[in-house]
Image 1 (cartoon, helix red, strand yellow):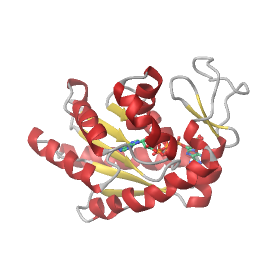
Image 2: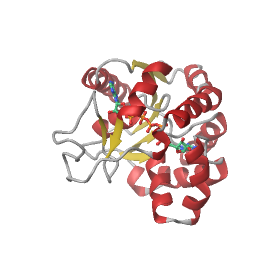
Image 3: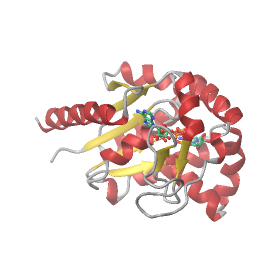
Image 4: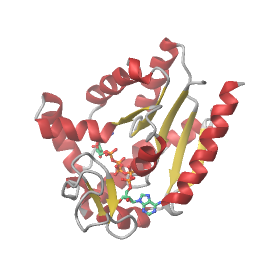
Length: 223
Ligand code: AP5
C-alpha cells in the first residue's frame, strides 16, 4: 500500500483533533498530536514540560528548539514507517522547512496538507465549550456532548476544560495563529499540496469530505 504522509492544518479549535482521531482510528497511520505530547510532558513535570508550560498557558508557541526535534523523532520512528498524520506541527514556516529537510533525508514526500477553514468567531464558541477526557478524547458541550454529562463515553473519566481554553488565552492563540501559522497555507498551496475543507460543517460532513480526499490521495500515490 502507498505511504500516506499527512498534515492537519488550521486555527486552534478548527477540528484537527476531532478529525485526526477519526482518520487514524483504524491504527494504520502514526498519529502525532503535538499539543497532547506537550500537555503530557507538563503533567509529568519533565524538563520539557516545565519549560513548555509558561508558553502554553500564555497561548504562545513553545520555542522551535524544544518542539522540532521532538516531532521529527516521531516522523523518523518505525511506527511512522507506513505513514503519519501530524496534528499541530508544523506551526510556523521554520518548522515546515525542518520537516521538509527531514523528509528529504529519509527520501520521503508529503502526500497532502488537510486545511480546515473556520472563522474566528466560530473558534471562540467551540473552544469555550470544549471538554476533554484524561486520554485527550474531545467533546463539545453543545456540538458533540458525551452520553452522560461530564463523563467520557469510552473510559468513564471525568471531562475537564483545558487551561488554555479560557477566553483571553483563546484570543491570544488566534492572534498567534494568524501571525505565525497561517503563512503555511500559502507555503503548501504554492506546492500544490493544500486541500481545503469547510470546517464549519458538522463533524460527520467534514469527515466524509476528508475521507474522500484521503482515498483519492491514496489512489494517486499508488499509481
Ligand atoms: P494544540 O493542542 O495543538 O492546540 P490547537 O492547535 O490550538 O488546536 P486545538 O487542539 O485547540 O484544536 P483542534 O483544531 O484540534 O480542534 P478540536 O478538534 O479539539 O496546541 C496547544 C498549545 O501547544 C499551543 O498553543 C502551543 O503553545 C503548543 N504547541 C502545539 N504545537 C506546537 C508547535 N508545533 N510549536 C510550538 N508550540 C506548539 O475541536 C475544538 C472543539 O470544537 C471541540 O470541542 C470539538 O468537539 C468541536 N468541534 C470540532 N469539529 C466541529 C465541527 N465540525 N462542528 C462543531 N464543533 C466541532
